[in-house]
Image (cartoon, rainbow, N blue to C red):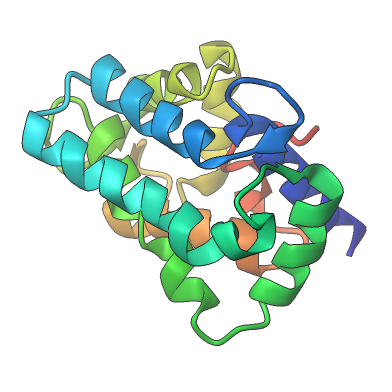
Amino acid sequence: SDLWVQKMKTYFNRIDFDKDGAITRKDFESMATRFAKESEMKPEHAKVLMDSLTGVWDKFLANVAGGKGIDQATFISSMKEKVKDPNAKAVVEGPLPLFFRAVDTNEDNMISRDEYGIFFNMLGLNPDMAPASFDAIDTNNDGLLSQEEFVTAGSDFFINDQDSPNKVFWGPLV
């Protein structure tokens, strides 16, 4: 669907950290490094996050790239095929608990609205955009995101091609 393509363009934009028009392993490394630094993550968690995020590249995208960067059109085309794979959900969900841990800066096993703002900041987005996205994915409206809500929203972003509140998981669509 057009919405799904727009979501993939949004994700591409968020993870192309160096804004060179291509996703590379370096972008995933930079993302992990920024998350670990900004959230003052413990070194052992930072290593797990780095391994998980680079694992997304290694397991899911490296074969698309042939050792090179992936441009947006190639990424979207590849993702169209990948999400049909029965294992896609597991691969997509793999790093989400680690993102959750990175965003849960006070380690209370919940993400607050303020912590979600930190998540947006880590992605290079204006934290002022976070409340609208937070409210959209806070399915039980308790003002907190559980790991289950976070992982479900993150996974749904990639897998679901229909309109859903989770479309803003990675911020406003581009």
